[in-house]
Length: 150
Image 1 (cartoon, helix red, strand yellow):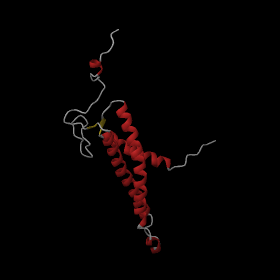
Image 2 (cartoon, rainbow, N blue to C red):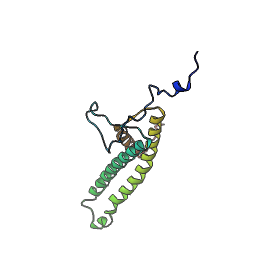
Image 3 (cartoon, rainbow, N blue to C red):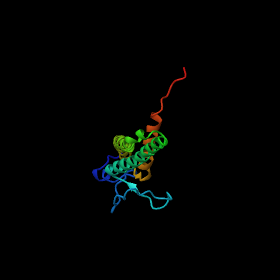
Image 4 (cartoon, rainbow, N blue to C red):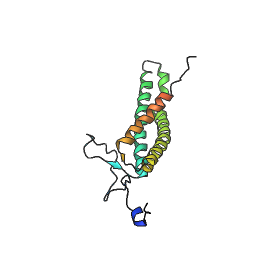
């Protein structure tokens, strides 16, 4: 068996995914449709983290503000004194959404991005969008109490 020479070790392998020459990070959100048309990929861990964090912030904000809207609509027809502090509900929900999304989006973005980098894969710009939805669905599912039937 032939020993590898330093010049053969420097040759890029098939699975290695270096940034293509002239690569520019796509602007946010860069979701392409249809999927076969002009694909956008992320190569840097920082970009993977940023896209995941931004999508998580957006989706958490929409879901929390929707919940705040439902909470406010349930107060329609109630006493006027209830409305005195109800304007704080959307602000409180938005603050909670921001804190949760910052934590979840950062952790998931870094873990998924590091996994893609370790596997030498490029990340489609759809992956952070999907993980933003996964984060909020996990939050919704964890809000229910799960009881055993024993």
